[in-house]
Length: 241
Ligand code: IPE
Ligand code: IPE
Ligand code: MG
Image: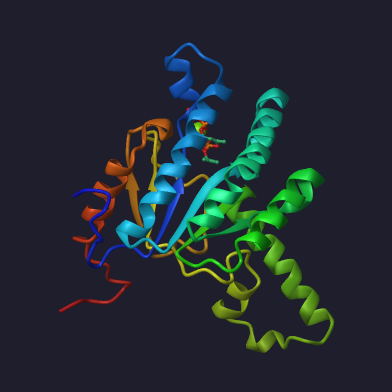
């Protein structure tokens, strides 16, 4: 399978937990931020591979609500990297037909970064070849809690009848309300956990855990995983004939 072979029955929405940047740098005797820079370069390659593989939606985990626990130096280095990434990549993303969205809580992010995020969303709003969603200060539980708060406010204001609340009602209040659920969630670096990523949305996703560290994750590895996905049988709780 090469990166330009569209996959029959492939995943329309792939979500990736991009893990292993720190270990990649450590193996080279370099600071963790060097790994994050190498990881950012991979994002470009993977986004570009999506149209050829039939992936219309790509959601990537860039920074979790738990990642604030890291050293101040690493956190501020990452925030600088996010700002630079947006500034550097904006025109290329626009030209390649990529629509960019951000999910996560923007309240804790600095104003300059939030401005850049808003600008990139507006700039690329007319695109639709690939829908790239970047999860930044994102946590699945935090997202459900924020959604519940807004839902409760609607009830308190008399605009929503609690008797009518069901799964689709809650989903409308999530950051991902315009996105389909992920079909496939990939985690790099060998860890077999989801670390608070897309908890609600991944209820029936297929999972793929690869030992490859994120800065080593090539488009060919991506294509290979997507090719194997096509052979999986998804049952959604039913018995298939
Ligand atoms: C993933 O790589 C990137 C972020 C969480 C921002 P890590 O920084 O978690 O790398 P490891 O897991 O320490 O190798
Ligand atoms: C998950 O990776 C978050 C991102 C990839 C942004 P972590 O490295 O933060 O997850 P844990 O700490 O190993 O669970
Ligand atoms: Mg990690």
